[in-house]
Image (tube, rainbow, N blue to C red):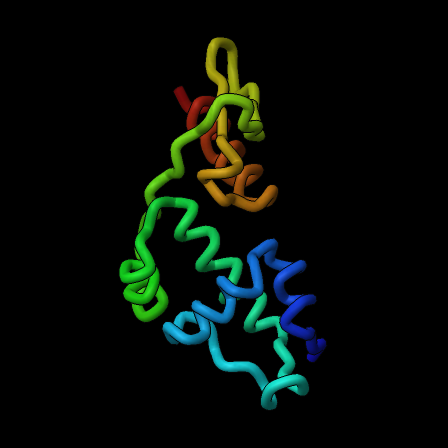
Amino acid sequence: MKEYTMQQLSELTDLPVRTIRFYIQKGLVDRPIGERKGAKYNEDHVAQCLKIKKWTAAGLSLDKVAQALVEPPLELPTPPKKTGDVSMKTCIHLAEGVELIIDSDIAQLSASDIRSLANTIISQLGNK
């Protein structure tokens, strides 16, 4: 498993070193492997930081994030869109007058999930 320094972890997650240390202190991110200057972080640490970043961006407080780490929420609040934000949407023509629009930022569906969903809808529309 690849190992990172604190600085590399900070760059990978786009979180300040101070914030990551705070998350570790709060028990939201696992302690590093090793001590002091020899401390290393791995992919698990990266994933934990990115999950916390995503959840706080969605509006969860750190207390709610701590709860979510124990029992992940079924649905996260959608962060408010700001002027200038860019979002990707997939638009699939299903039939005359019928389109499926998927907001990739919110739906978190893979390309195969989207294809499967579209094919299911198309087959249902064909039965009408």
